[in-house]
Length: 280
Picture 1 (spheres, helix red, strand yellow):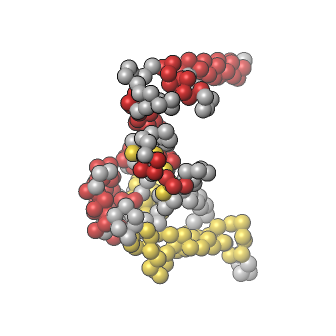
Picture 2 (picture 1 turned 90 degrees about the vertical axis):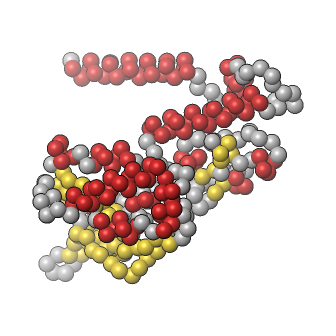
């Protein structure tokens, strides 16, 4: 069995994490599956702009991914590695889907509900660091397939009234540590904050979201302690929980830690009840 995972851009623009990639390399013992990477595609994706991205502020995780992919590619070049497992997972880059071809019957008719192959066009990276896009080359490759799963990705859109602070190309709110860049427009720091994919783009795992939210909350608390209150007075004492609750309650529905714990207890009870019903 062969699985192909393909991306339009290069390996340094991929959104997977080092943890996800490492797990793919550990499937051989558990699932009799190998992860294979082509070294030529890694070389083609290592443009000057991509190497500049590696040297940038957020380059460290990408360096680890690049190093692991290079190691996988070296192992995949060994004849003893190729085809030695029941399942081969190929990570391919710089390939964009062009056409899905249906199976053709003996009399030449297409079975439109049955896939036979996918036609891909090779791409090259164009543009500056952090803004590279996949440029078509006119070179094509057809891969036989009986199943195709399409992932077009997610992209944020601006909420009404926030267009001035929204980066439509990246699909995120322009921010620093969760503070939306409203200061330059209004002269007042804080007031609008963002977390999650609308803050950093569609990438990361659960642990990423936790750290992301902590950073934004820290920005909110810091601003609440230091900037003028809505009535024009300044705070001289540290922010208190009641102060924050009073501010938030006027603007949104607040879920407290106690409410979250109560919800979890109810979910656990329902799960225990379902398990007991299933076993009787």
